[in-house]
Structures are given as structure tokens and as C-alpha cells.
Length: 83
Image (cartoon, rainbow, N blue to C red; front, side, top):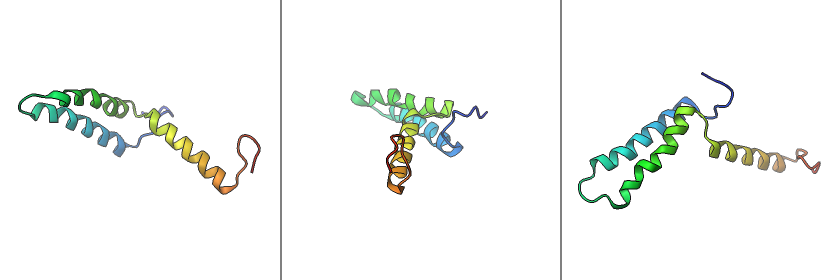
């Protein structure tokens, strides 16, 4: 369902979900002491939640930053009225 707040394509969402499951599976498949590998399931939370919701705040911020940089490079008038 598209509510207008999604900024991830279906391919991005599937990739993030698979990546999250891969992080969790790496811990499950490891034999022996986990050490820092125990943190991988915590790292898996972000891509899996963003895939489920369809919105990534980091990706949205980067896209806004790049669009502002592109506007400044093409000579469009910015928010301060400078060319």
C-alpha cells in the first residue's frame, strides 16, 4: 500500500530483508564463541524495519542533499535567492 511516504522500491525492500536475514543466519551458522558476531542481529534490525515500512530516513536525507547539490550546480535559484 502506497501512502506517499515510501521511498524504497520493491527491489530495495527485498534486498534489505534478505540482507537482514543473512546477518541473523550468519550468527546461527557460526560454531564456537560469538564475540562481536553477537551484534549482527542488532544490526539486522534497521534494514528489516525499513524494508517492512518502506521508508528509510537515511536514504531520504541523502536524496534531498543530492537534489539540493544538483540544483546549485545547474544554476537554479535556491532557497536563499542566489543563483
